Amino acid sequence: MERRTVLITGVAGRWGRRLARQLVKFPIVRVLGLDIRQPERPVDGVEYIEADLRNPLLVELLRTEQVEAILHMVFASGLDQRGTQLSAEDAFQINVMGTMEVLAAAHAAGVRQVVLKSTTMVYGARFNNPLYLNEDAPLHGQEGMPSLRQRYEIEKYVADFRRNHDLHIAVLRFPGIIGKSGASSLMQYLGQPTPPMLLGFDPLFQAVHEADVIGSVLHAMANGANGVFNVAADGVMPLSRMIRQVGHLPLPILHPLAYNLQRVPGVKKNPLLRRAVPFDLDFLRYQWVADTSKMHTELEYTPQYTLDEAVEDFRGALRLKRYADVLPRRSLSNGIRAFLSRSGTAE
Image (cartoon, rainbow, N blue to C red):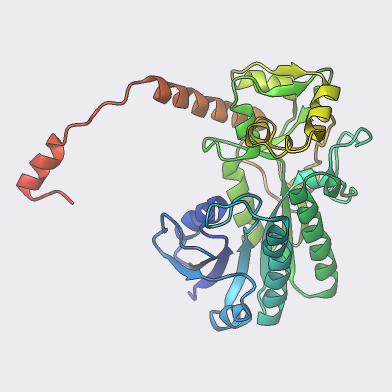
C-alpha cells in the first residue's frame, strides 16, 4: 500500500509535536514537519524542514513530495524563536499572511485536505449571545484581543477561499483546552490558587480535553472534512463550579474596577495581569457557549472526555504538581548506572 504524505506546519510547537507523535504510529503515513526552527525534542520518524511558510518554494515542496493533507498548526501570539515579544505586524504576517500562503500553495499543488485549529472565542462574549452559538453565528471576536482579530481575518479568508476553490478545508473551533499539560490559557487561569471572577457574573463555560484536540484534528483529516465545526466536550458548567471543581476558590472583583484597571496605560500588557486573566474580561462576564450538534452529526466525532472528566483530569494533574512542589528534591545516587557500566549493559 502506498504511503500518504502529510505535512504538519508549526511542528516545533506544542500541537504540531503532539500531532506528529500520533501520526508516526501509522505505517501508511509519511510525516513531514515544517517550522521556522528545529524542534527541541525531535520525533522519530518525522522528516523536518526548517523554513518559513511564506517561502516561494512551498508549492514545489508540496507538489514534489505529493503531500495529500496539511495540518496547519501555526499561530504566533507571544514570543518569537529568539524569545522576544512579537510585534503586531510580525504576528499578522505569520498568522494571516502565512495561512493565505499555505492555502494558495495547497491549491496550486493539488493537496486534497487542509485542517486548521481555531477557537470558539471568535464568536465573542456578548450580553445578547444566544444560549448556544452555531457555526453560522456572526463572529464578534475581532472586537477583542489582537490575536482574535487575526483569527477572524483567517476565518474570513478561509471562507472566501473555500467558496472559490476546490479544496477541502476543515476549521475546528475549540473552547478552552484542558488536560494534564497545563499549557493553555484556560489551564493557566484555573491553575491559580484564586482565579479572579467578576462579581455578579458567572457565565457558563465549555472546555475540550487536549486529547480530543488531537483526536478531532486527525479525524477531520482522515475523513476529508470540509467546513467549520465547533468541537467541545459534552456538557457545560458555571465558571465558579469549574474553579471549585479543580480545588480552588474564585476571587470576586468588582467589574467596573477590573475594566478601569485594564484601561490604565501599560497595565493591560503587564505580564502578571496577563497571567491572572489571559483573555479579555468579557469572557468572564458573558456567555460564549458553542453548539456542538454539527460535530456529532456531520463531522461524526464524539469526544473521548466529557466536561466533568476533562476537569477532573486537570484537577489530578494539579494535585500531582502540588505534591512534586512540596516534596524535597533528593540527590539520586548513580549506583545503578555504575553497576550497569561495569556489567557492560548501560546505554
